[in-house]
Figure (cartoon, rainbow, N blue to C red):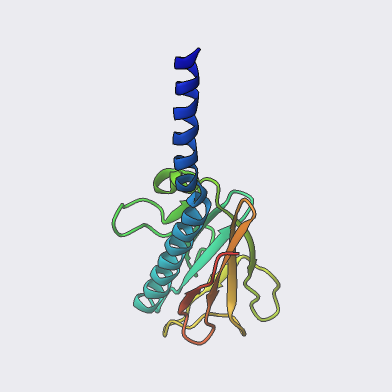
Length: 163
């Protein structure tokens, strides 16, 4: 009986020490997802500046938790990723984003003139967006969320705080 009590006490101590290590995972995953999305937004912007004849869009599909970079000439088909040779599509919870499965695209404001939440963010030849005002994309996981703001004039991405 004494041995059993010692084992239970040791497990309790290990559990108490391990708990803080797991509490940051939602925050860490959310921050990692925001950084990945910001990087992909920068890639879409750079691609657009490099391909002025066929500008680039970031297209969001919140029902599948997916986004991709597409040419203006066919926004339904993603471009080919330069490094992997695969379609430039990202889905939280699959592929290289497997560890980010708890993250979802919870909201976005990509209002182009005359359209409301068209789920597409276009970039111009000089890196500017096709929006009249700054665009936002919000990612969420559990009860936390983080918002990325894309400057309408410059196309630069700002990552907000986690709430």
